Image (cartoon, rainbow, N blue to C red; front, top):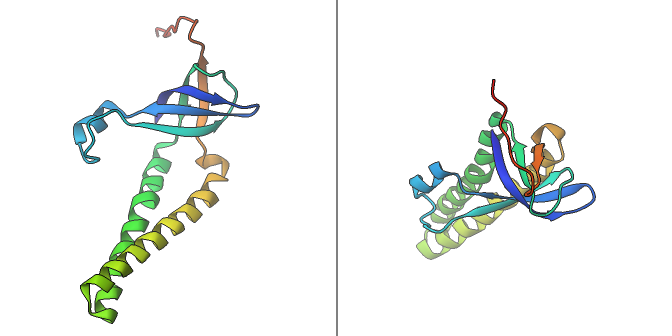
Length: 141
């Protein structure tokens, strides 16, 4: 998947790129927000603040990252709720155990993220940089 974003911070060997929410996400409404959402990602490469960049992330990795980010914390929450209800037999304690399970799931997901993020095939790749003063031209076949 190739996404276009704007450089918001630039260092000697890495940049931070801000991506706006895709149009198809706006139609979903799952996040229950109607204001524009933005995501900032740190990427290896060089560009200047204000540049528009094209970034590629392999499609297979996007699905795996989504699973890690969402499924592991949800499993932690559900396990915490089940264990809390079975062992403690009290809804309040079960809810607290669910929160502990959710927190543990988030921490586990962060560990996976750090391990996978250090591997080169998991990092987003900078494909192109367009300066704001340049005219962006598309090549015709």
